[in-house]
Image (cartoon, rainbow, N blue to C red; front, side):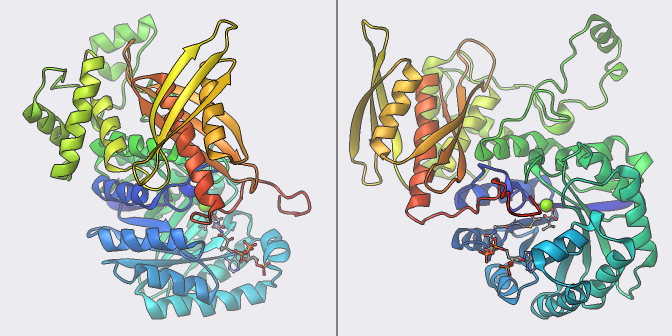
Amino acid sequence: MRKIEFLDTSLRDGEQTPGVNFSIKEKVAIAKQLEKWGISAIEAGFPAASPDSFEAVKEIANTLTKTAVTGLARAVKSDIDAAFDALKNAKYPQIHVFIATSPVHMQYKLKKTPDEVIASITEHVTYARSLVEIVEFSPEDATRTEKDFLLKAVQTAVDAGATYINIPDTVGYTTPTEYYETFKFLIDNVTSDRDIVFSPHCHDDLGMATANTLAAIKAGAGRVEGTVNGIGERAGNVALEEVAVALKIREIYYQATSDIVLNETFATSELVSRFSGIPVPKNKAVIGGNAFAHESGIHQDGVLKNPETYEIITPELVGVKKNSLPLGKLSGRHAFITKLQELGFDEVTDAEMKELFSKFKVLADKKNEITDADIRALVAGTTVENPEGFQFDNLAIRSNDDGTQTVTISLRNEGQEIIETTANGSGSVEAIFNAIDQFFNQSVKLDSYNIIAVTEGIDAQAEVHVTVENNDTGTIFNASGLDFDVLRASAIAYANANTLVQRENAGIITKKISEKANPEDPED
Ligand SMILES: CC(=O)SCCNC(=O)CCNC(=O)[C@H](O)C(C)(C)COP(=O)(O)OP(=O)(O)OC[C@H]1O[C@@H](n2cnc3c(N)ncnc32)[C@H](O)[C@@H]1OP(=O)(O)O
Ligand SMILES: CC(C)C(=O)C(=O)O
Ligand SMILES: [Mg+2]
């Protein structure tokens, strides 16, 4: 049975999702969880894109001990130098060089002839290979590239020293049969005296990313690329959890396995969802809230008689655990520590533990039963917070006789100074957002506002997701807030989003606007 390697690009392609902007701390926390999940290589970013991206790759390279870390680079020497500099301390560094090979990309975007692209592949893969042992090459938009030219580009990269050949379906255009044939064609025709590993990199524009990825494995691919929860540019990348579980359930058919620790899947998905601000839909395959729910009578009858009638994946397989140790307001420190360990949070420091326990006690006073989801939410909010900018402190609401609401909100700056603003609104949320707008005094448009209950029941914690647009730059930011009270969660989410906008305006973070189409550009 073949072992399929997994490369996760949630921190690079995943961050290209409109609105997603992970802080460096969040990226490191995700990278550590990915290592625990059994990912063999993490594409930690595009170091040449911004100082923030560079620092994140560097920090992850300094942190991981088991997993290879790779950085993306155009076929441009300074991009490759930036990737190498960021990866200097990685235990297992890799550099990923890409250049487009489809006619439309070469002619309009790169303004290069096919011969110039081939020369660029030789020059830049050779250069990357002079710096690190393991180089990955991607012919961008491979699935719209003419077959013989694709083979020529790939053979050129192999001859220049690339070990991993990634065949991106950049615009989510291919189909399973076609992609299978592309892989077969390349694997059968590329020659090398070294072992070359081919990998799919699928986008989900036509909803075929998982099927395409599995077809590539069937054709002989040895590594897969994708993201957690399928986040990524446009309709997203392939969701790696779907590929990992499909391989497990159909391992005989694919004659392949992986090192993915499947019972870490749910925790990985939840962390990425929280930090990306993108909730997992209830009907999402493998990890959605309904993935294991049986609603209709005939299905329930079948499952009661034998779960195998309708259940091919068990909740336990992907780490959805039964709440074996229920916690409440009378629980003590020992039970709390045991629960943290049971949930896999074994790296919590003493100081974090102290803070977590006091937050747990506050929550337990308000909520009858503290579930595992509450604890995970608590940990995510405490161990990774945005230390820069203003933090939500408190809010007070008054209903007026004319039906309007008045809100006084206080925010705390890094020096722990508390600043208050007051505003009116026709409803409480509007008044809260008006008060925060008044405080930040910057031009922001609210694009979306969503509330999710973290757990079931009337005393559930609320998670609020907002998407805002910085009117000065057009950049979109997602942010979330979590609290027992939905209005406080709303205030936290909106204040966090405004903090990101403020940091962009101050030049501390940069995010290229990829989500806005340019009508003048033939590619858009
Ligand atoms: C399919 C993918 O996911 S590709 C990865 C996409 N990710 C990103 O774009 C990350 C964020 N990007 C950025 O921060 C910026 O685009 C940067 C820093 C990389 C470059 O910024 P700028 O120098 O301002 O260039 P800009 O983005 O406007 O244009 C891209 C340039 O790179 C060229 N280019 C694009 N891809 C490649 C490549 N693989 N190899 C060589 N050149 C390339 C384009 O032709 C264009 O060149 P031109 O300026 O001569 O016309
Ligand atoms: C950079 C490449 C691998 C990419 O993300 C794509 O083509 O989708
Ligand atoms: Mg991609």
